Length: 114
Length: 114
Image (cartoon, rainbow over all chains, first blue to last red; front, top):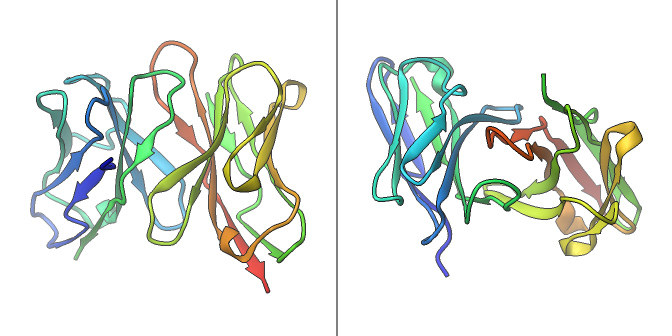
């Protein structure tokens, strides 16, 4: 079956512009996660959704970052007024539910802010 | 604070040699434990996971890991490494209750010499 997909695969934007990153989870997966992977760093948790709700937004680096999920499916991560330090690979993962489930990862979106 | 430590940033082994990648965690209780692998340009794939029970768990691609509560460790092992195992390996912990915020280590990059 289809895995987690993310678009775009690469995004180059100018500092100060807004960007939207999209994640399509595996059908039927109720949990969805966003991570950021910077060069040489591990995965930094950003936010997770259970259905359309985001119980824990503590990982979002600043108020320039926001995320939403609609219809219990597609999720969008939005970064406003991008900064160079936002350059990273943004990974999305989904799982059948929370707690103790394997996360299935998408290929990521590589964001470069110039 | 909860944390995951992978002390080895890089490891180089010869093909056919044995491998052990270290992972230590700091958590109030026994968490769920995972090992993921990320091949170049790819998303993360689950190798194995520990929830409870037998402390030696078997995974895909011939990997195994042993949970040692007394040492707060979950080290990954493989008896004989193949060139295709060259990748980055991430240890992760997930809480057993409360917020479902997975914590990943910073990764260990494995190089395999022919």
